[in-house]
Length: 324
Image 1 (cartoon, rainbow, N blue to C red):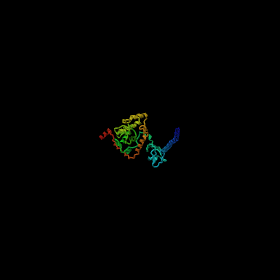
Image 2: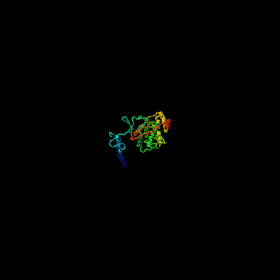
Image 3: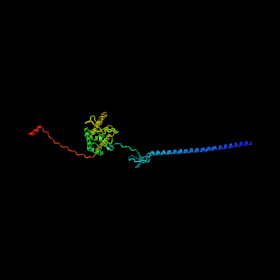
Image 4: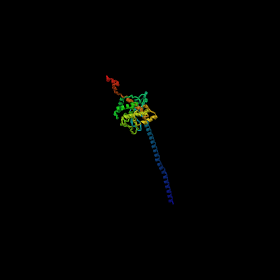
């Protein structure tokens, strides 16, 4: 009996001891589990703060790099996303150490009451110069300018022959030949062509060209090509038909439009009508001025041979001579 009681007591003591050990170890294990969690959270927070700080610094650096301005010397660095790129900056756009975007120079300028097209002074009151009238430039000046502007000119005739044709065809219709020739030089690039029209077409004013490789009109001879040019001018400037047979394939269309919208009789009136550009007349006048500026020796005027005056003798005088 005693033995049983003692065994029960020992078993109870053993259970109590085991329970005490378990209760003592559980909190210790819990603390051990909690510490790493606390440490991990601190590390994450520190890493997060560090990343945010680095991101802010990078953002500030990028903004500073993008909007910074550099003092300009002989060589100025152009700031961009590639700071290592360095370009030359023209002196005209350097102002107080700040780089400014250069603006395109105007083609037409006015100074002291005079107009200049790309530096070439235009004639006084050029906007009122008529398409009709006597030439001021000479044939010799026109020939010299063409050969200077295009030493390797390719035409179906000589330069001298072409100039003669312009004087002949234009003066027949009272059109100024020097300015008509200047217009031809503008249209063909001093007969270098290079666009849709080719040299052999004898098309001296871009008749029928609309771009996109369309060749435009062709003429059998330079004479017909010059005549078509003058006739096309007449389609814009007068109500009556030309003195010669019409060879301009666009004459009827152009003439009908001008009859509806009004004729133009000045070269300035061709702006926006003959050509869509607003400075078409200015190009013609600048070319004309360059022709006028040519220093040439004009050929001496050949005196006309004096024709012997033959007196018309009447029948009575002849009879008298025979009788005497």
